[in-house]
Image 1 (spheres, helix red, strand yellow):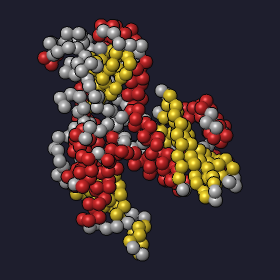
Image 2 (cartoon, helix red, strand yellow):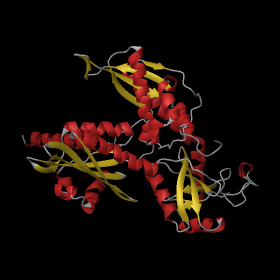
Image 3 (cartoon, helix red, strand yellow):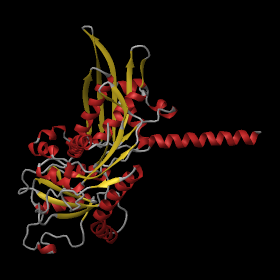
Image 4 (cartoon, helix red, strand yellow):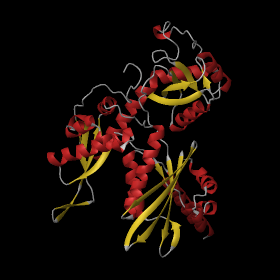
Amino acid sequence: MLTHTRSLALLTFLLLTVTALSAMAEETIDLYRTQILVKSQNEEDRNAAISNSLANIVVRISGRRDSLKQPLIKRALQRSGPYLSSFSYGKSDQILAQGEVEIVATELTLKFSVSAVDALLRRAELPFWPASRPSVLLWLVQDDRIDGRLYSTDGDYLQVIKRAAAGRGLPLKQPLLDLEDQMRVSVDDLWNFNSDSIQAASKRYGADIVVVGRFSEISRGGQSRWFANWQILRADGDSLLETEGKTAAAALLEGVERVADDLAARYAIVMADSLDSALTLQLSGVGDFAAYAEAIDYLEALPMVTSARPTYVSGQQLWLSLTTEGDLELFLNTLQQGQKLLPPATTSLNSDLNNTRYTPAGSVDNPLQYFWQARLKGSINAADSVVDGIEKNAEESVVDGAEKNAEASAVDRGAVTTLQSLDAEQDLLPALVPND
């Protein structure tokens, strides 16, 4: 009997552990893939869904909601079919209204052409927010008229937030709100934006960005509205936002949109107005968002660097346009002292690689080449080996993996129709600097 009780307790513990790990799992978002509910499988409904989905994709990848006002984007939305690479239909349990009749919706999965969409953004001179994005941990608290302040676990509210985050391409995490969370950060800590307690409780989740949202209903002049305040905690500084709406869902939805706007403004790649007076730095070994953000923060913290603007990304390589004070020799000496950037053995002020003997070092055609080694432990030769591997394999593996996974997912949901895209070239990201 005792053995049975222990086995049951162990089974219960394992089930709770698996549930907790599932809740902590980070959602993976394919930037070029959407799912939308349609009333039927006819061409008219499908074309409308393609246009609406392309608009969402443009906002998701550019990071800007006002991108849809750009004339080139408006024309593309009127002729959105060629930007689609495949589509498939699946079953749904959702209900849509068709006049006075309710019908069961059909789920339409759309996969857009990476190269065609990237080319569109490049022609429209829009920013590009790479797929390596910060994971966001969201704490949500509500001031309820009856129960007072409490952790918000309302399923409807959370679904609104999840859909909005997925639509903007934000990998969203939610706290478990277990005993450990509640001991580390109280409802009042969250409501009062107590950063120290919030950061301490958030460490276990390993998120890049921590967001706290608090919301309540307020009656004014006989009318009721919902107000929400948002605190965004980042390594490079904090932000405060405020949203409102006629319903709680509207205020929360706008909050997620504003958070996405804030992060995109900081991390999306913007085409430089002029690169003539700036130094171009090609940085290898930038494999995830943490390295991406850390490298930019490190460069901008250097005394002689006034700005470090990302201009291009391919695989694990990042190009930046640096505005500096002082001459090139001084800048290189500064990098050497910092020991965060490791130069290849061939790097010099007069490198003749790729026929650049007479091209100024630090120019677009002859960028300064370094390997980001903030977490690297090993020799220079080991780092050079990693760089060689990145240059040969990174872009192919990323492109192949992204396309195969997306298509496999679509096949699992049903028959997939593959379409001819605008551009057969499979560039993973838009070439904003080299040879553009």
